[in-house]
Image 1 (cartoon, rainbow, N blue to C red):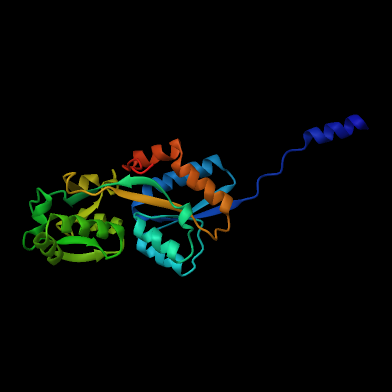
Image 2: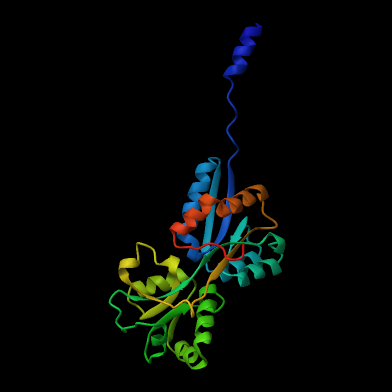
Length: 253
């Protein structure tokens, strides 16, 4: 009898882990990199499902202020993370930079306006597409323009023909030839759209290094899982995936 009980106990298997879910709010420019990060996280945690909400950081911060449930917020700039802190959804002490990005000027593959440098955006009748004010890529674009000079910034603003909700929409419009130019993150020039674009580098002296912050939500329904995802993004494996998609190392660590 004792032997039978021992045999039965030995045949028992551990109960499967209870399914869990984690919701990540992430800047649109992180779409490809975070999609792969999510797949890798799920592979390492088979009971976990990662759900993403990709949009302009300002849109995401507004949704958080409205109380939309989430577990992690990854912004393309500090300003929108600060908005999430101000709304009480994120603890300031939990915010950490996790990657960087830079900007590049793009034109359609045939470059109909004949652009060769940033200053060409001040020429008359250039059809420039950018993001709506408040979206980080627009803030960075305005910062670059202001640094070049007041006249340049005014001429560039006069050439804006469309303001998009996020950086991926800028890329799409330029790739389709619906505008002469746009300024986007280098990471947004992904292999699928690269053949449809001409890239015009912005000199380092004029460019901006965009630092991206990440934080778990203070009211996350899955705080342990949220912390694990943030840690994975910052791990060697996570940083390798970000680098694969054109992102850079953190400057302030």
